[in-house]
Image 1 (cartoon, helix red, strand yellow):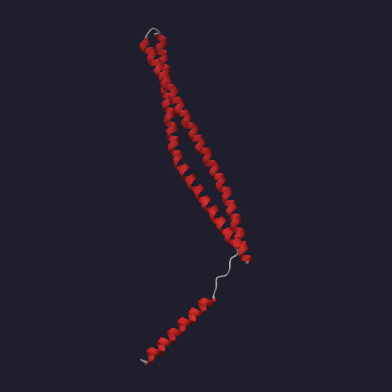
Image 2 (cartoon, helix red, strand yellow):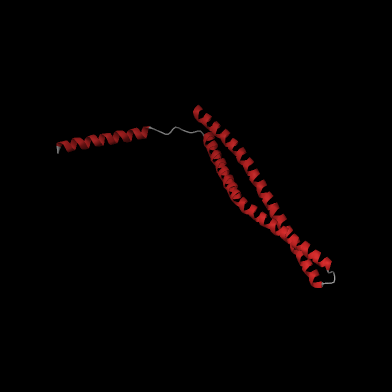
Amino acid sequence: MKHTKILLSIVAMLFFTGLANAQTTTATPVSIDVLKTRASLLKETTNLNKLKIKLTELNTEMPKLEDEVAKANERSAKSAVESKDAANKMNANTADQKLAKKASRAAKDSYSDARRAQKLTDNLLSTQQKINKLNVDIEKLKVKIDKMDQQLKFTENVN
């Protein structure tokens, strides 16, 4: 019993000593400029991550677009050959209305396939330009973040 009281009083003294030490240690004050710099650094890092996500999305879209362009070009070339063949057959027999309609239909199909291929090619080029612009923007933002980070470290070391 006597040992329990002594042990209990020692634990209580250690507890109150620790509590007193915890109250005397205070967090070092951080200047408002440092906090503002940290906030803007966090904002820029968030923007960088958003740009990287967009870049990844566009990069995953590129193979699909390239495949669509290749298929559209093949279809356009095939329909152009069919149109040429139909026109040649029509020229051989100019009085045949059925061949004239077939040649006209083949020419329309060739035209629409060529337009579709052109639109897909334009879309592919536009996506490639977006990827290039995002890469440039990401590099600029990385440089800006590095400068801000160095400034923040310098400011924290001075304080």
